[in-house]
Image (cartoon, rainbow, N blue to C red; front, side, top):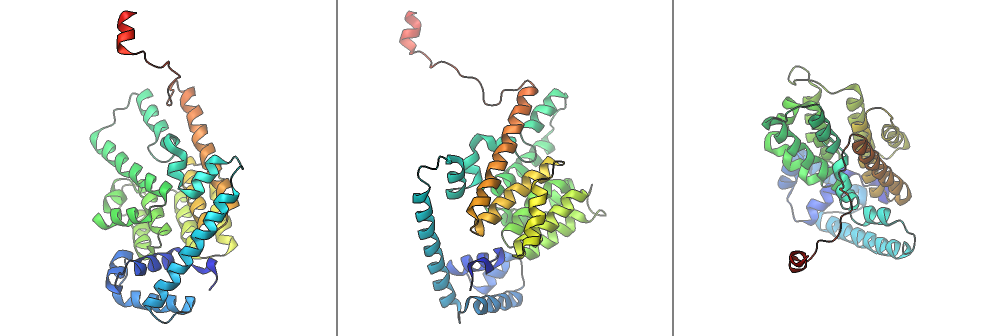
Length: 303
């Protein structure tokens, strides 16, 4: 079986098999009926050319070992390239590579916070709670921690986000799609787009982005990837653009397209740098200013 035939759902199934999960546990984790899960497992075995769970686990572990070997070789070859940010994004994740700059990206970021203060708007308790919840989802997106999204969804099937502010639920929907939790993702997106149950529905741009994400992560054709790349280049709607960039990075990295994954990572850094400059234009210096090393207490007292 070719490497690029492993989509997010199959990858998650293999991970759970390697952890010793039964079909019942896998069904609960991925949001399917147990009978449906067994059908998917049968299809997976056939696609990778194995007869049972044990052989599938061996196949998966061998594949992961080979990928680690390739990663080690690529890391050694990168020595001297000077692309420290790209190296860290590929070896770790976007959250680790961006560091403090991650606060300038995503919903309810630093620009939003400063804008609220300048406009004299008080951030009430419910808004602070929602902001904290969505920022944790955004951090999970930067890390590619899809399981965090599933755990958040399992608490109340995403109902609170869908009811409070559907646009904030786009991060959760993206995590579910990226992790291959297709049934949960479809159900949650249906909640977000149901204007009868939500306070306000998704914008056309957000709805299109989720549809493009669903297609890109469930198929391997260039058309679906091209639609996601187009969303990542959209000059309007910075929130959707940043989300598309992050998801594009993860998808390209998973497909082994390191060169374009790096480009996506650097584009995300560019978005963060643009936000930092915007904050400075608003009179804010989020990274502070250079200050001298504090003097020793005794020396300071003598002076």
